[in-house]
View 1 (cartoon, rainbow, N blue to C red):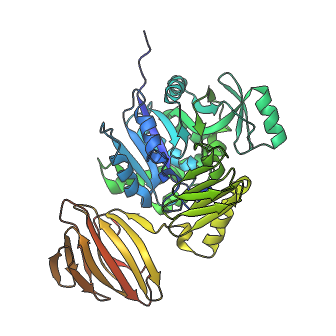
View 2 (view 1 turned 90 degrees about the vertical axis):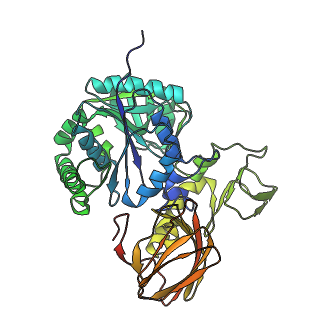
View 3 (view 1 turned 180 degrees about the vertical axis):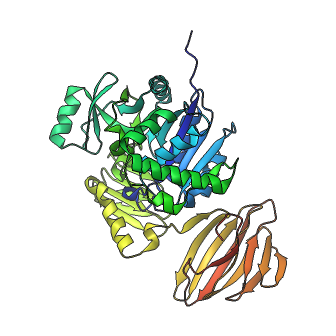
Length: 475
């Protein structure tokens, strides 16, 4: 008779910059939201992978506050079984240790023996059956008081991952990213596993180990969680963490804070088709190739090209006589890199940040709680946007000091506040909003509202905004 399943509470950690996958991954649209060829994002795949496990009672996601609404949209499309969802919303990134401490505190409020399964949102796992078996084994070890890490059976010599030297479930030692020579020895020995960054434990065990090995971190997490809980009241499924108390937590990984110090750590070795897709080279290796080793996604024409990965969002890419390149084209940025130097893409992102170029942060299309906007064109003193407002959604009641706006409805119906007037606009109708006028755009209908907005003024930055009322807590 099969053993009864253990109640399970998956915790999805969603965030990170994903700088090595720029220009598709950006600060406000990071790696978890990258679409795979089947149309699903890495985040959606992580959700479905966890939701399909036996015994799952609730899904907690720890993410950045700015990514909350797009995360909700991603889940809404796939949560067909109405699995209960909850969210912890960070004001800024603080690595995995504070996130995991907060998750343990969240479940400890109601059941300290809850078994948590911590999963990064940006990994790919192709063998669901083997994954489920590994989780079942890990959950039993977690119930017995262990903090369980998942060790991946190496398939090649790899210097980009940390390693675990294992003897059955026993962890002998953790090893930082090794040299090629050491990685070769680890691969040949068969006693070493890749450190996957996935964990399983009870809330009680993790809090005990945090209290012993990282008391200051736990103290900051407790203060932040309790302040968020007090502000939210009972029953709210999304908690916004207080920036001041959360910011006091050290920026440290759970590996350094607890895992490498604890005597309660166990490992489950598994072969689950795991890939953390840490670079464009790694991304290319999971795509089908032509006879010359090329992987092409989108529109491209090639001649005498070998071992290249080419991806286009829409424009035609032509490539002639090149080898071993990554070519990524988006609406506002193009990346050309050697496959062997794909890890160094993060250097470009660092330079963009230093020069305060927003192309490291935002795509042309930006997701907002109410829908999206797409920058179609911009130049000195003007910017043109396509704005989509979801049915029943509304932008904030707001004002701009330095720009005026012209709105033209393309499709749907708009409910407009312009100064002291409130009125309805239909397709092919428009309004002009002078600077310093309070205004609001809402969609009262049951279909998407699409407008074209033309901004004119001396300054057109997104920070020229004063919110007076906002349905999403941003005023």
